Length: 499
Ligand code: ATP
Ligand code: MG
Image (cartoon, rainbow, N blue to C red; front, top):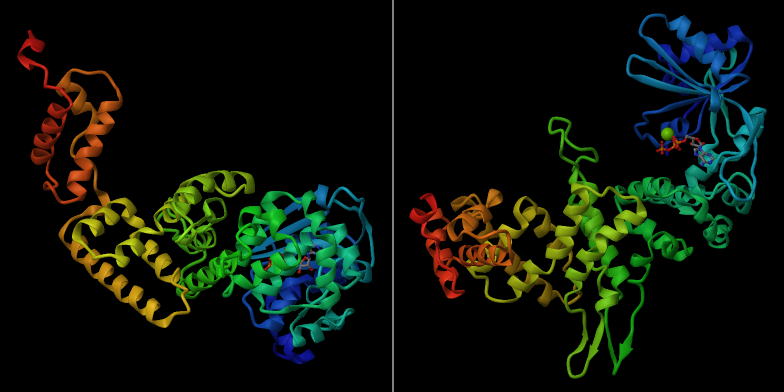
């Protein structure tokens, strides 16, 4: 955190927009402050997009008068229901709101709102570091109001609520998610009282919409060390409420002196490994490519969820120990239900996570055995475009403490990667389609849609993927006819057909 003197603050806010806001407020005879996240981020030297302005009076009136003052190029939107207004000017967005006093009922996070003082408004803010205000009025321009020692907390890297944390969290339980999100994003500690209040109020999260919860989870995911947030969620009891499938990964069982690893902490380690490698990937999708999504967030989701099938597939097998057979396929099956319930997107992003979860054991299985051409080719066909992300996830998945074992896997992975780039150079597997279509099979044998069509296509696919036949239509057709004959199916006489 940097220290900012009054003169420096004046310099930081020395942009025409802040001066025009101050002049407008002076003219209307009201106090006006820039407040919340924007002020916090000035001290933390973080880039900040949205500017929030607090007016002790009507925020809408100041916004409208500011719009007139700025003239052409300013765009004012008023949201009367919320008592707020937004001014857009030369790429800057400023949100105006009047100071308010809030009182809450037990079953809703929507408060009863009345006009209030600056003090009232700062009291209803979530954390001390978010309750800083800087005055924009001419005679007090740049003056900091720090009613709850937010600066000291920022210095000590502490997240604490301005009022009794039980009241703050119970009034609006979304603040619990925000608390953990800020602690993770800003690498700060949650103050003890606040931490205990998280535990006491965790159940209150039930009144918060999934969309708001997911917004916060995504911000935790995109933080440099996302595990910090998930450990905190587990610690205060929010994790089982928000993501029971992930919470179920926690714990170690011992039998006959043999323990399996704690799959929650393993998953979090994998998540952090992936986060480290993807640190400089863009958070947002590439604007040029309209239908793409940023893989940064979703690869991280895949890392968190890759072992989600383990609790249900766990067995103790005599003479072998703990096994988790097919946990990847079970996990793959669980993803759509989890995404639907959490209101995560049910589109390509879900399918991408699903593919990675389903395939995540494959490179390890290959690397554990002899790295054959045909196994690598199969992997390449199935993973398609996602192959690089899959390899990255699998490397992150090797969290063994046994250095020798770890090195052996990493060496084998290098071989898999080398073979992959060899094969990629030779063939264009990323866009592979079966040279034999269902249509062709139906015409050849004069049959209607039925199971056998899929079976024949699968046989052709297997033969190509295992390098038994070349990837050409001619070879594929010949092979398909042979397989069909094996099933007692022969081409219809096409001459008869045309008669
Ligand atoms: P970011 O923009 O990075 O999410 P922020 O702190 O700016 O962080 P916003 O949601 O933009 O968060 O909110 C702006 C300010 O409004 C906050 O700094 C805080 O003072 C206040 N605020 C937002 N949400 C709440 C809430 N649920 N309860 C209390 N105060 C809130
Ligand atoms: Mg903000």
